[in-house]
Length: 224
Image (cartoon, rainbow, N blue to C red):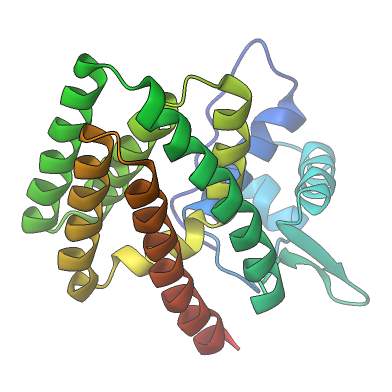
């Protein structure tokens, strides 16, 4: 059981929701690993709560596909299969191409400037080697890109899909050999948006997701 679990109380949320968000974040960030047991008693002791909100939170995780209950064994963190990844990739490909199309049409100079700063910030974090900061900088770059679409419902859907892949994305970012490619991909996307070149932006997006998918496939095979 990871030592990184820490409950952050919120007076506006039921305890089960706070526990759910804590466990969900730990799974998405990779602090709780695929296949790791979710033992109610141990989690309750670790988080300082009763078993009831733990049990309810695990049910909520199951509904999101982040946990699974195995007969005679109990609950554990769900493993992502290659089929899961392919399904998410198909949807992301379509939605991200739509997002960059809208971004090319709607991006304003101030947002383009933010994107350039985020691109440079990501490059700077890769040189420092802090994984948490690298992941945060990468998310920030894509957040600015998504927000430039000026479509809140699309942004919400993309964020949900991205979170489903987040734990594998972190594993991807643990490999410094991918940083030069990621920086090149960011730069190409930035240039496409700057030039309002929709076809180039869509091509860059496809390459970016295909490269990520190849690495995720490798990670899934390693887990199996």
